Image 1 (tube, rainbow, N blue to C red):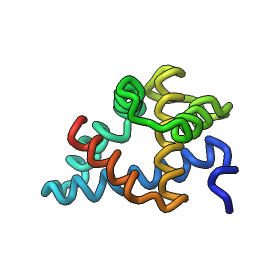
Image 2: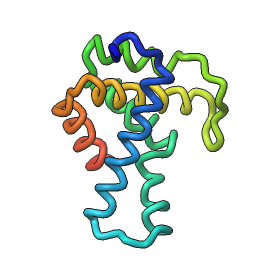
Image 3: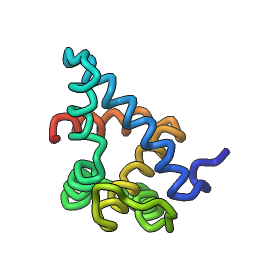
Amino acid sequence: MNPALLNGSTLAFVGDAVLSLLVRQHLVEQGLTKAKDLQEASVAYVSAKAQAKFVTMLLESNALSEDELLIYRRGRNHRSDSIAKNADVVTYRQATGFEALIGYWHLTQNEARLKQIWDQMKTTL
């Protein structure tokens, strides 16, 4: 499997799972143990609105390389049959682009970049 050849939706599918695990581990490390508290706190990271806000900050600060921008756009622009439940289409697509980046970094084993962005995300949101 070559991650560079995967479509944006597939990369986002993997990225969603990776980000979810990072968030869950972070929240447990923060001392949260009740399922309701964990679920409510996770929304600050995994909601489309939160992800779109964070990726917009990355874009505005030119924090992404040209290659990373291509992956982000591949995820953002991929035609999806799924419909956003709690976000407008633009926000949902931005979040999908961000998840595609997370998936790409994971699949290419670029753990240093993934950790760098995750550390920035958890201190920003």
